[in-house]
Image 1: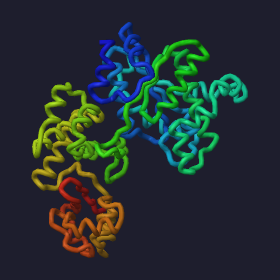
Image 2 (image 1 turned 60 degrees about the horizontal axis):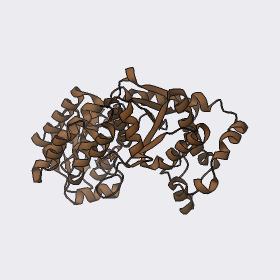
Image 3 (image 1 turned 90 degrees about the vertical axis):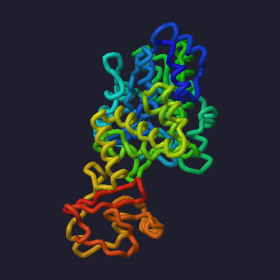
Length: 409
C-alpha cells in the first residue's frame, strides 16, 4: 500500500499543497517513507483542529509508511506566530512538560508506536550555541524572504507587534526538519496550511546544507462551508482529551455539523470507505441527520473508544428523541444557597454556559428557545429557585440540541 497515501489524501480532502507532488509519489512508490508533523505544547490537550494532521499521520501509517510525532518542547518556549494576532504567553519548562504529558495520551489512539516514534525538539534545541547557530544557519535565510510569509506579513499589515523571539520560530522549525532528516531519515514534513512557509524553509535548508531532496505537504485548516474556523462549542474549544471535554460534548460537536459540511467531516474524521462517505453525504432533508449520527459516532469512537461513542449516542437519543434528562449530559454545579435566594433565568443560562453573555441569554429567552425542565421560559427575569430542582438537578435547554444539567450541591 506504500503508493496509496497521496490518493487517500486527495479523495478524503486532506491534500492542500505539496512542494513536489510527482516526486513525492515516486519516492513513496519506491518504498516506505518516514514523515513527521510537529505539535507545540501550548495546552494540556490538542483540539479538533489538530486532529486534521493527526489523521494525516494515521493514514500515512495505514499506507505502510513511518510516522514521527515531534513534540515541540523547545519551540513551545518561543511560540509560533502563524495564524496568531498577538504573541503567545511565554511558558515555563514545568508548563510545557505538563502539557506534553497531557498531549501524549491522544496519539496512542491513532498511531501504533511499534512502527512510529515520538521525539522532543527540546533534546537538540536546548543545546544550541546561539552564536554558532547564527553563523551556521542564520546565513541561509534572508529577511526579505521571511517578510513575505503570511504569518509575518499579516501581523505587520495589522500593525500588531511581532517580537524577534517569534521571528526566530521559522528558523527553529527549519532546523527541526534538518535534525530529523539526519537523526531519523525523515524526508517529508507535513502540517496545516498555515505552516507552508515554515515547511518550505526546512526543505530548502536540507537542500543547501546537505544537498539532499526532501518534501513538504500541508492539509487544509478546519473551516466550515462559509470559510470560518470550526472547533468551538458552548463550552469552548473542542479538546481531544476527555478530561478537558467530555466524550458526550465531543459527540455533540460532530452531531451538530452543518448540512453543507457533513461530506467534508466524514472524509476527515472517520475511516469509513469513501463509497459510504459519498452515500451518506448525498442524503437530503431529514435523512441527513442519520449521516450526522454516524459521523458523530465514528469520530467519537476513534478518539474516545467504542464504549464512549455508544454511551454518547444513547445519551443523545434519550435527550433529543425521548425528551428526558439523561445521565451523561454536560453538567455544572450550583450551590443550593444560590437557588434558595433565587437566580433570574437569563443569569442561570449565562452561568451554565448556554449563552456567552446576559444579553445573549435574554435574546434566547425572548425568542422562545430557552426551556427549564422541558418547559418554555416565559421571561428572562423568571426567578429560578429550589422549587425547580428535580432529583437534585435542573435541566436547561437552549433550542433542541444544547442541554445542560445544573447539579445542585
